[in-house]
Length: 457
Image (cartoon, rainbow, N blue to C red):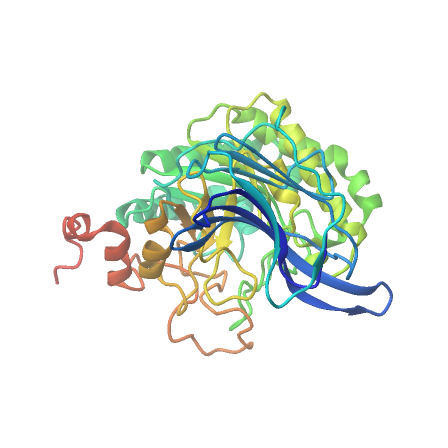
């Protein structure tokens, strides 16, 4: 299939226009001086209902050449739908949706603004299918990313962990008090490299404190966000700059070099396997995140060595974790389509008003989990409850504390001392009071909120 706009395949199409559609939709296009024309589309799976189309999942596809044929395959067996792109062996989308299970018509389509061409179209019965996505109900999750309020990043939080356990305990207690039931925490390989076995003790202590306060935990092994080279020395936060000291993991330098990645493989395996093996059946952990926001060609708009390296690291990490025999499921969120094919269940990020961010109209049900959201003024807690929770999706807000990591400043905020009129991210200040009592009430519900008795002044 080739397209200059939106084109795709419809399956189980009923006479009333209901069914499913797989759409390859253009997001951007341009000309790279070295690599020539490119376009950056999304592969989307949608459910067509009488009231309109509902987006179930999407996969970002990098560097599709203008006018080139792209291979797409769709399998539907019972409530399970599998979507393949280019690689016909591994699906990039695995969806469970039991709305329309009866056979129907198959159709090819394009929107009214574009042109499309189809070649070698085959339709046949489905025999063997891949392993379906995990059918776990995540609608209960009311989570928040946690970085200790007096740390500039999560690396510092883990590095000097034993000196600040009282702060950790107090802030986890606040999370529970204000209605959260999960915290999402970034790990880092350089802490493992330096601390080894003691890092496991720190993680275990953290899990014990979270469990004491009724909080589940999910742990992130790799992350592409941030632009500070990883180090165990920590500069002060830069006033006005969003998340000014966040360190990517492993690092952009290693991520972008196949040679460096291979050279670090043994150390990375020690890090991932050591942690996953120690906590492989730990009920305090709800799931492992392999890689958060693996950027790859999102930053370059072309095929790059980085894309292959990210895919390699994702595969290694999944294999290492699964090799421990863990019963804890894994997922990888966003940033290219690589993550979905290594995930046991689908996760997404939703930042209302941000370009190419999240699935604001997603309606995939409780098997889906939003692992990042909350960006004021576009999406406060009230909007999260109406947009995400109303669709029976759980969520993880960025973030619990309003602290030294500077996430209270919005993306792109100029350096300087001016405080924002409202925090971009974050719910609770270090002294324990929330940014907005009404937001807490929206999340907890009025009945539970009224039992707090904390604001009767």
